[in-house]
Image (cartoon, rainbow, N blue to C red; front, side):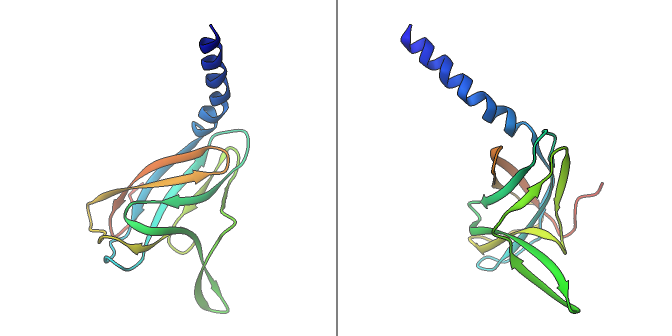
Length: 145
């Protein structure tokens, strides 16, 4: 009986985590082709259907030594890119886009080339929703739609 009560308590503790991760959806995940040893970039649309804001805080993939959240911008007429260590806010009931010219995932130290038509996983870590594994497709242009 004690084991059953303990198991039930564990399930109840896990429910908020399961519900929170169900609030994050990732669509249109893609990356540009890139050479082994170099860097690549990943893009996607992240939607938060939950009642509270969340934050993308980290990412990891077996294809890269590390992944950083970066932001591209133009300052004084010059294109720049820099890490965004604070993460990317995903508003409650809203969305955030990882896209060329804005926020993106910088795949650093590619362990293999990213070739058009291939797929690879990235695990996105959110402050509240936890980890979400996403399948990225390699293609030269964003997905249609």
